[in-house]
Image (cartoon, rainbow, N blue to C red; front, side, top):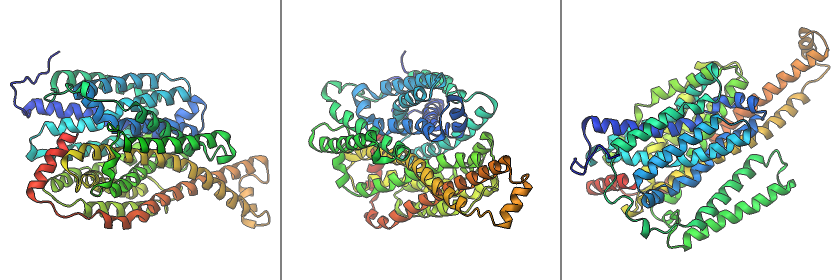
Amino acid sequence: MQPAISVTAPAVPTGLIRIIIVVTAISAAVMELIDVTIVNVALNEVAGALGATIEDVAWVVTSYAIANVIIIPMTGFLGDYFGRKKYYVASIILFTIASYFCASSTSLWQLVFWRFIQGMGGGALLSTSQGIIFDAFPPAKRGIASGIFGMGIILGPTLGPFLGGVIVDNYHWSYIFYVNVPIGILATILTLVYIAKKPGEGTRKSQIKIDYLGILLLAVGVGSLQYVLEKGQSDDWFESQTIVMLTITAVGGLAGFIWRQLTTNHPVVNLRVLGKGTLGVTTIFSFVAGLGLFTSVFVYPVLVQRINGFTPTMTGLSLLWPTLVGIPLFPLIGKRLSVGASPLPFIIIGMCTFVVFGFYSGTLNGQANQWDFFWAQLMRVFGVTMLQLPLINQAVAGLPPQDFPSAIALNNMIRQLGGAFGIALANTFVTRDYAQHRYDLVSNLDPSNPLLTERLNLLGGASQRAYKILDLAVDRQAYLLSYLDTFRLVGVFFLIILPLVYFLRTRKKSAAEVALAAKAMSEAH
């Protein structure tokens, strides 16, 4: 099937063709982003259906993030090797097939496996979609393209819980994956028909060498580290031989990966660019930004469903409304950055907002309703908005244009790694904190305290049923306190790295440099 845009058509599409291309690329990107968070509101249902704990079900989220960490830095390389259009279509197809098998899974680890495969397909959709949207606009309007894509970046993860909630409340949890199948088929057809190949696309295959060892070391290192972070607490850390062995494997794999990338002539991830410009420091901010976004969107649905009695649909709506308020900021920020505005003020505002979000969220309680959480979630959306595009721009500040693709791929990889680390950290932290809070609460249950006696009498006297109800109340309070402490911990991370903004300062770019950077940014994607 031949693309609708022929070789005689204008280099930049216009009119209806441009609209179709943008809608196709945004649909694929949003589909991928929705799947990052759509399972969050369904964790309780998935755990019950597959006979797993909430802590184990977290692997459904983190396996997807790990796959993204592995594949995202390779996206540019694979696009060059196979051709961007072919790789994009193959990724959509892989994502769609994996979605079907996720929905058909009958065990937790079967679901985790197909979520990993789904993440391998989805990892290419984000950055490749961005490049396709950039190519659909002339250079002077690529700030608008950034804003459009930015709205998808923030809308996708927030639509996920809402759609997931509606589906889980009205249908079976498997439909949160089945819904991707028709969208994936439509996106595949539209891509084949309307998205043209770039000039020379796929012709350099014989010139590109694949760093198989680097890919293997990255997968082994990240996978082993994630297992240690997820299961260390429940397996009593280094009392477990498995944890010890995988810790050694993680250290060896990641050290070997770094050595390989710095010594080979054909690295899968160009780590050498970390020493240029402000990229090295920017990746720290990107890591914490990913940690803050993924952790807060993971913990919040579990908190409000387990403690505050929200239904999945209520949970999704409580995330949706604040996002709709914050979305218009994205094109405004994109436009300001496209004319040479410094990303630094946006980054500082975003960091400070996340600090306030973390500590404010930590003050809420088990009686809070949707509107009580609205302001906290609005702060989260505002913080993400202020960080997303500016961090991408900051990542390439001071770099020559030829280093933009490597810098952007590395920055995106670090953000996803921060998200995977954040979810694992949240699981471990909640488990430890819950145990401590429960111990403290039980220690304060003094049998001679008249208030305790009165409470037991209200529950029917000192009976087994009364003590069971009291135990459940203590359990609920301990979990509430541990979730609130997790939000505070997120705020602490942002507070700790805030002074590092001093090292993000760069000289102001000239108009010519801004135009060159905009062109190189589009080519980098």
